[in-house]
Amino acid sequence: MKKIGWIGLGKMGEPMAKKIVQAGYSLTVYNRSAGKADELKSEGAFVANDIKSVAENSDFIISMISDDAALNTVAMGPDGVLQNAKPGSTFIDMSTVSPVASAAIAETAAAARISYLRAPVNGTVMQAEASTLVILISGPKESFDACEEIFRKMGDKIFYTGPDEQARYLKLCINMMVGISSAMMGEALVLGESGGLDWEQMIEIIKNSAVGSPVIHYKEKTLKERNFTPAFTVRQLAKDFDLMLDTGRQSEIPMPITSHVRQNLSTMIATGRGDQDFFAYVEMLEELAGMKK
Image (cartoon, rainbow, N blue to C red):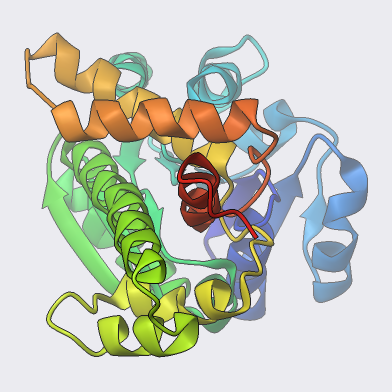
């Protein structure tokens, strides 16, 4: 029986970890807020007091955390994964972080004889609960092969993308396009609204037009009802846009559209919308246009 450790039980981490324990794996979990592990414990998971215990007692250690700083602490700290995991074990990080931070961890993992897979996910909490996430993986191919069964408990579209940081780059590319889509949709809706179009009909027709992407379908109800309870907040998207821009600058990749959208995300945060869903972009534009209801 493969022993799996899980670090990070946030909005996405908790339902993903639950799929692992429900599949019958031996699972040990750790979260800074211990109460978040209660439901996993009721499902049969063991609860660890610290990251060190997870690392020492697991064959595969998975982390799903917030950002570069958190990953550095989890992976590289004295009580972290790479200092305490057994040689021959595998560390899998499923967070959205920068390729630079990830590459530093890869170097340390190799020196410790620990396999390191980068496995960021695309999808929502509902997809995590339904095991229908899209999972992008890069790192040693033999380690991916050994872990593919685990990934398939969490997602139904599994892509191996290469031996290094390819999965990190691809996740940033996808999030870039999703964020820009919210800006494009916001501008289009405000223009249409100014011309007297019916709000719900306009969204319905756009959804079924040539530009009706899956993200527009997913956000249809959000937009029609103007309910911007967050599935993914403006602050979270701004963090990802910062990763994109920082990564692009290192290779002198021009990203003028991404830069413009990032500035408007700052405007959203400054006007009190930072904890709303990022598709609230449309309300900010209505306000700028003097049309705010």
